[in-house]
Amino acid sequence: MTKTITVLPGDGIGPEVTGSAVRVLKRVFEKNACDVQFVEKRIGGAAIDTDGTPLPRDTVEQCAASDAVLLGAVGGPKWDNQSMRVRPEQGLLGIRKALGLFANLRPVKAFAPLIGASPLKSQYVENVDFVIVRELTGGLYFGKPSERRGDHGEKVVDTLAYSVGEIERVVEKAFRLAERRKKKLTSVDKANVLESSRVWREVVNEVSHRHPEVAVSHLLVDSAAMQLIVNPGQFDVIVTENMFGDILSDEASVMTGSLGMLPSASLRKDKVGLYEPVHGSAPDIAGQGKANPLAAILSAAFLLRYSLDMDHEAGFIEKAVLQVLERGYHTADLKVAGEQTKLVNTTEMTDRVIAILDEIFT
Ligand code: NAD
Ligand code: IPM
Ligand code: MN
Image (cartoon, rainbow, N blue to C red; front, side, top):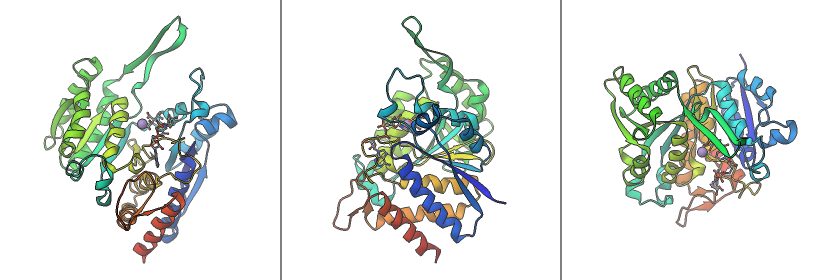
């Protein structure tokens, strides 16, 4: 049966990096004679321009009828006017919510050739291998009430709301992941201040009874931000609230050498998932061929692994990315040094990855 992947390029460098990821996927499907169709739909600022909304209904319907979704990024200065009621980012939040993708996996592991590309000393970066499990459809991003300035005089409201069930399902997912890894789970919260965090902690402790082999610890988010820098090697799986996870994952990306290296998978209980790089639309480099496509390409590998049962082929893509870096190819964001390094643009980097994939296949 034909599988369907919906592609949501979005804004800025989004179309550039999803273009790269789709080229890589197409090569994998060709080699394996897979019957997969790609359908492109609008989201974000691009959709505001054409449809007046960041998430047109046909985009949601198409994604809901797909096996997987590949997304670029949304947003940019064109739609950044603070007084605008519709923003590109609402499209991204909306599609995550509409598809029920409550668990966002953001693995952080430095590829060996990029150890020196991080501004952190190499001894801190070498042993880094953890996954941030970010709750994605609740918390501070989705709490009601939410009131804009002007709705009620000068007051504004953002609410951090969770049901116990919403916490439990993402925590359960994190425990299961930890069971398949180093069996260490760190739950990050702000339980010294927030009631929602105190409940989060209780739920983590309750769910831990079902996973006795996993060692659990709790960290306050401010301390976690510090520990990520002074001792990142201590972490295995980190589970946390939506906004905490957003912030900590950009911080953690520094260990991989660039935000342009961090992929993600947004998952629910079945196999349908949305795959996107952690980075944004990078308006400062959009349209210049400078974007690092590797986060999007690695997200495509996750798509194969989690949505299409193609773990083997996902591994090939990851191997090709490692080899392209070993051979010294790098985009401008990767600060690698040495005589063997070769600065390439987005298209050339993608060409190199595909060429290495072809070598791996033969
Ligand atoms: P950003 O992630 O777009 O960029 C931060 C910095 O990292 C920039 O200097 C950028 O050039 C660089 N960078 C990011 N990805 C890169 C890549 N693949 N290759 C090379 N360099 C890369 O964050 P920002 O500048 O804070 O946000 C810009 C816009 O993107 C905003 O509108 C924001 O809302 C949006 N955004 C969207 C997503 C998403 O769609 N998932 C994520 C984050 C930010
Ligand atoms: C991300 C982004 C988004 C988020 C924004 C653009 C809504 O920063 O995917 O990390 O905060 O979830
Ligand atoms: Mn973010």
